[in-house]
Length: 246
Image 1 (tube, helix red, strand yellow):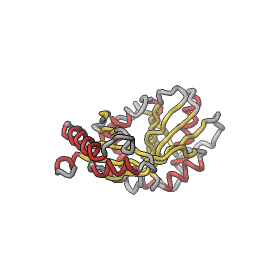
Image 2 (spheres, one colour; image 1 turned 90 degrees about the vertical axis):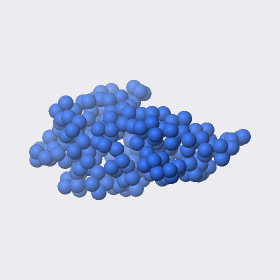
Image 3 (tube, one colour; image 1 turned 135 degrees about the vertical axis):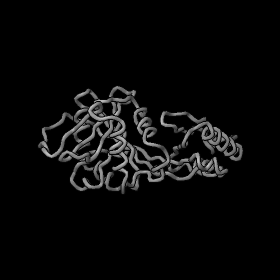
């Protein structure tokens, strides 16, 4: 089945291709048909996640028209009581409400330039759909969505939502604009949201990062995140269905 999500995306779920009495051919046909129907109904894309070792599942979705998107590394940080840190006077922090979706969209778009995170997704959906998808990823917490200004100019953003698990919170998106990279801003944003999450009673911060984004992965490693899982993300786009490629 395909579960519809805000932001005009879908997530594919199917029985294991290697399960007993499963017809691989029938499964491929079913995945292709469901995906075409979902995309024709207005979804911009449908994603599928599988373990790197699930070769039969990956082969089935590939045969149904899906293409590789990213190897996602899932990471976890056990939060501790925050320590005092030196305040960077060049930075100012604005939470959601002190900016609107239009401004946030401009900042997010600026952070995409030169980024290694899932480059195939760029330009596929309008920014309002992207932001809607971020808001729907977990429980939207407006006070945990930040734009960071450096010397009065937007330099990055970090978006954190709570999980249904009352102990956990998720780093939904973090990005730094090109002109502000190499200044340690990514680490400062992570430290800020980790401290805020702890003070709100959360004890775990999770995230997923594209394995190709080695710079971000190093930052997360330094900040104490540890890898807990990996998944191969695949995607099929509406343009493929419209062009009869499935």
